[in-house]
Image (cartoon, rainbow, N blue to C red; front, side, top):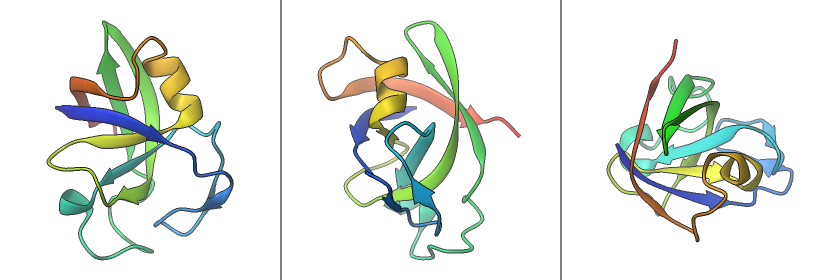
Length: 100
């Protein structure tokens, strides 16, 4: 578990080498977990489940979060609007795990 925050990729390329839109259910994994490798990283494309406020949500790892620590993840703005719409910028102690 860790904190979740959000970012606006705005159609830019994520660390995994594909374009990410704000509306895509994509997360950026903490740099410490993902390491220095970007394209071809074994985490790229990994499906995860996020549990927040009693609800589960599916997402795909497609980017690297340079400001995240531990097991914290950064959600696209669209995914954030679904997962934590009533939270102002940061939710603490959110569980997530690899789905596949």
